[in-house]
Length: 170
Image (spheres, rainbow, N blue to C red):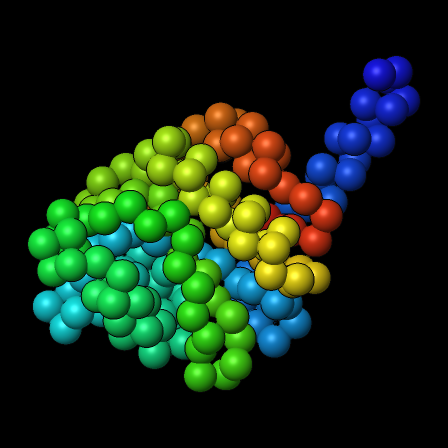
């Protein structure tokens, strides 16, 4: 690949990274994803207490309950209490917006896990490629409350990005 061609690849990749409030895309994108864990609270809702999850919960307060229901339907009670691996869960919010929980950790107290992010990004990529969506926006996984190195995570994210997928950072 020539330096000019490499420059075009880099430029194209940079266009997939956006800065700002991802929630401005509500109603403007097919799928909107926040980073998540697999911890249920005492009300059986998904714990969404920090980072992009908290912002999504404030905008769409029904999400913890909706994702908690998906987890309870998908996993046994014993599995739920063991913080299961799901990768990606998708629900339709009351507004009609498709919202995805992109798993970066199992317990909300843990740091994010690169292997789990890899699995979750693969799930997101497959969902996007096979569902006929035109656009998907997701929060950069694992770099805020997940405490991972953004450079390492970005290499992983770049592997799964395809046209129409956008990564957001504040």
